[in-house]
Length: 621
Image (cartoon, rainbow, N blue to C red):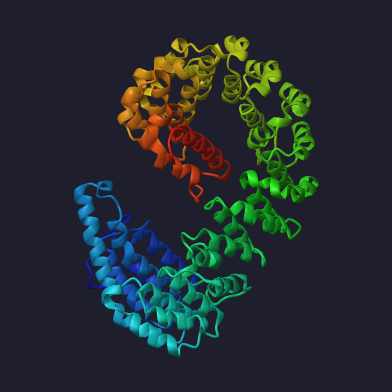
């Protein structure tokens, strides 16, 4: 180490003059000192996935440390070596334009050197397959799997046959499978007496593209439901835990993924609950399958019940399937459980949420988000009007979770459209008292011409002195209410020139032809990837210029707020938009959740299905 010219080399924070001391501390007899040194090494020689000129010589030292029996945290050292070795692959996966050419050349050279340094240490690392510490024997295959060109799979198979530790043997199976070992050998491992090895072999077979049968799913389920496993804490499972690692192996197989997530809930722990939520947010068929077993956990321990009801409230329309299990929780003493139950029922439009929502407006206790709750309860608006009138007259502060309760209530009312009309005087009064102005403006905008009486009050917030959110919110509301963009555009022009965010695009699209004054500002955005989606939809709706804008609309289709405006525009065009059918059909019929959230995805799916029906109405699908 002393022969290395460290001061001439770089790490993430400049010259690597202190790196020798950090490497010495990594070899400290004190495990706390050694752990902190490893943290420092991750921050300097492998900073957020980037390696430097000092990384290669540091990797050589780390290989020596990993081979020293008295050094602490050797599995973590091996993890760092794996990360360093993979930096080149990760860099090659990036767009070259992400860095200046000279910077990219330096990064590439350093990544090559760093990988070569780890490769040079492989003979010593291979000897660790016979180390006395099983955690080290389990970590080494993780590194070897990064070097398929060295063909370590045959050696791993030999070592696995003699390995007595279940965790180390499972790691060898995973590495051998990742390196492309014979399917027959992997299938033989699925009959191993050790549960972890059977699960590892099943994962390896799935990586190789084999279809899971009942025995494979059983092997994964047994491993997921085990209270303890030799896989826990291994490098393979650090990113997300054992349950996530095992279920992720099923990749693009929704049925088995859902089944495995459901089976994992039979022995519930937070990881299984969170994984069920991830699967629901991935596959459209999952909420109907996973919400019922999640609801069975609502009577369990506090942590499990809190996690379960949190996932349930994000479950979209299928929440209705478990409404009966949620209703008794409205009076739960845990404010988070009670609040999540209230929000879930309200999102589902369940009338049993109405008394609790009214009580929250008078005396907040539960932890919930009022905006989606009130938006979901729109069908019960008449029953909520007395409580809403009283609240808007004298707003009370919400819980810390709810943030600004008044703003949340107004944002929820913005989703009521005409149903909020009876509350118009109260919303105007809130605006006149200068409270939650952007949210009050959104609620008034949603009422359109019916809110004409609010225009004088809204005009009072135009201009920079009131702050950009208030000024722009008032301008949009005036435009939506009056249909006249001349005055509002004076206060929106600067924002529109700099880009078109989702809120602006939706406001303009709602204006239809009345958005015409904004078209000259939007035309340049049609060639800007960051604003083209919304601009294409708005300009088309304002001008009706299908011939010119159809290609832009097709390119803009996506499961995003702006992308769905394009879908709506294509649906309005009808059969002439047939070229968009594949993109629109993907949103309507994909098995995957495509949007950022289950409820939004369901809404997008409905919009896309309607648009698709209009486009193909005169021809066969």
